[in-house]
Each structure stands twice: as structure tokens, then as C-alpha cells.
Image (cartoon, rainbow, N blue to C red; front, side):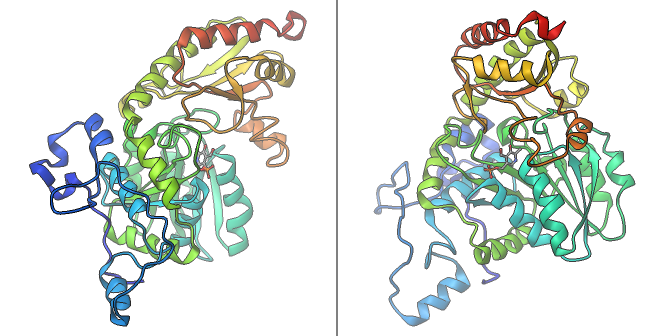
Length: 422
Ligand SMILES: Cc1ncc(COP(=O)(O)O)c(C=O)c1O
């Protein structure tokens, strides 16, 4: 892979029409970030066409090397116009120096790990975290000689520092965290990373979206998202992204991504770009809905505890206030009656759908102790020590009417017999 390739630049980065990124607000960036495609001297389609081509016809043999050296399109695993378009848009929202999009969120995470970690290295990560990340850290990285230490999710950043060793190369954080909703202090995390030599910081901020919680500005090296969730927003694609604080980091991962083949398809890149145009509107509605639902649940007699960063009772509410524009759409609620209580709720909602995943326009609910963080993944001791109690349910609040969602939860909670919670 050539070292001359550079991240695609959006209209705002190139100053097209005399507008720079600092001239507009985050709402406008989400809607108006574009990567140039010229259809002729006078016009340019507002929505880029989808380049399905796997390969490109060359005019001469020498052009092959020229494109490899200077950038351009030659083979779709190496680069593709639709990926460039969505990469430029996400990079604008994040305020980074370059973004790469991947075929899933896990492809983004595993490519980041394999790009920067090697045998003998050590990583500190929070636990619990997304189940796929947990599996990667505990079962896959050790097979390649990479050690890990877990710190409890929601702990002060100082805990990470205590576990840094001479061979530590990465600090990994997720915030708000899946499924416990604990929050990591991004400013402190960035400071810690910058105080250490040769240690990269990476944050999975999927639960917040880059619109509500830009990560890079805190001095964190890499921002990660499962674009399957809020960025895509319509439950119709799987994708992931990494945004970097330097072009050098971008280039390193581009090399690994190209060779590992973890790239996003042109069609999914195009769908993702469409989703991003309404990101700001959706995130506002997800957040205002979730605030109302969280307040309802917190006052319900069949609910033991609600974890939502927008509630003053959330242990890291002040940190969330500092770093999130609004508090997003994810709620964890511990239902009285243990596994049975949780199951009765998730199986009796009528508007909210029983499904894993999150971040789409429609509300979803799941029961982590038997589903995403169940016995096939972790022991019950690990699960409980991470705050994933038997009655915990995870709700992804959509953009429906908040009162309809509350009515739905109320009727499902009514189905939990009093005898179960006595
Ligand atoms: C916080 C978080 N990170 C990463 C992922 C992985 O994303 P994907 O399913 O797109 O691979 C998920 C998936 O649910 C997630 O919730």
C-alpha cells in the first residue's frame, strides 16, 4: 500500500463555496458534508451514485502503479468512492484527521487491535463492555500473545493508570457502556493517554453517536463507532468506523484494513451516508424520549434501579453532562423479580420490539443476562460483578411518541405478578 494516500476531504475541509467547517454548526455538518463527485463542468449530484464496480479499467499498465502511488480507484477493496464519501462526512462530524469505515463495528475494533498490538503487548479495557469486544479481548487477543487487564466499567480513570505496565500499548474505553450505561470521563482519559509514551487511547462511543459525544477533541487517539446503530439509524445495515487524530494512524490502519479486507460495501456506505444526514434530528428525539421513559421507569414500583446518564441518580451524571450534548436513547433498567421479571417485561411489550441491536428509529428491548451477555459468553460471577444483574433489561428508545412507549412499558410491567416481587 502506498504511503502517499491521504484521507478523503469533504467540501468543508476543501473550503468549497467558501465554507469551512468552523463556519457551520454540528447540525449543518451532519446534513451538508459532501465528498466531491463531478458529473460535468456545471453540475454535481447532491447524492453520490453508487459505484458497484469491483474493479476499474486502466488506460495503461503504468496507471496501475500511478493510482497505487497517488490514490484513486483501481479495485474496490483498496478504495471506493462511496466509502470515501461517508468517511469524509463522519470525519467532519468527529473533527478528526481521517476516518475509515468497516463492514461491521467488530471489524473496526478487531482491525484497530491487530493494527497496533502485537505478541507481548498489554491492553487495559473496561469490563463489562460490548459482548463482542469482551470475547475479542478475553478469547482472541490472548491467542496472539496479547495480555489484558480489566478495570471496572464506570471507574475513575485513575484505575486505568494503576494497571499500566511497561508493555501496555492500548487503553480501551466504552462510554456509555453496553449494557450497564456507566460513563467514562473522556477528558481524564485523554489526559492519561497523552501522559504515557507509546500508549494509544481508543473509545467506543457507539451508545452516544459522534453528534452527541465527539471524542477526538478530548485528546483521545481513536474514536470508534458501530455505525450499525445511531450513525446508520434505520436497522438496515451493519458497519463500523474509526476516526483518528493523525493521518499517520489513519494510514497504518488503512494498510491493515486493505489487507485484512474489512472494508464496507459501496451500497452500505451509501445507505450509511443517507442515515447520517438526519443524525442530529434523530439523536435529539432519541434523547428527549429516553429522558421521559427513564423518569417513568425510575418511579415505577416494579423497577429496582434505572441507569440513564440523563438522570441525576446516575453515578456519573455530572461527567455525562460535561461531555454529552444530550444523553442519547439507551436505558438499562433492573426489573424486580430477577430473570423472570426481566423476561416477562421483554416478552410482553407490544410496540417496543424484542430484538438485540440498538440505535434505530424503532424501539428495541433485550434481556442481557439471558441474551447478549448470557452464559454462552461469560460466567454468572463475571456478569454480576459487572452489574449485569438477573433482572436487567436494555432498552433502545426509538423516535416514536414517548407517551406511547411509556404506555407500552406500563402494560408490560403490569404483567409481572406482585408475588414475584414480594
Ligand atoms: C457498544 C458496541 N460496540 C460495538 C458493537 C459491534 O458492532 P457490530 O455489531 O456492528 O459489529 C456493538 C454491537 O452491538 C456495540 O453495542
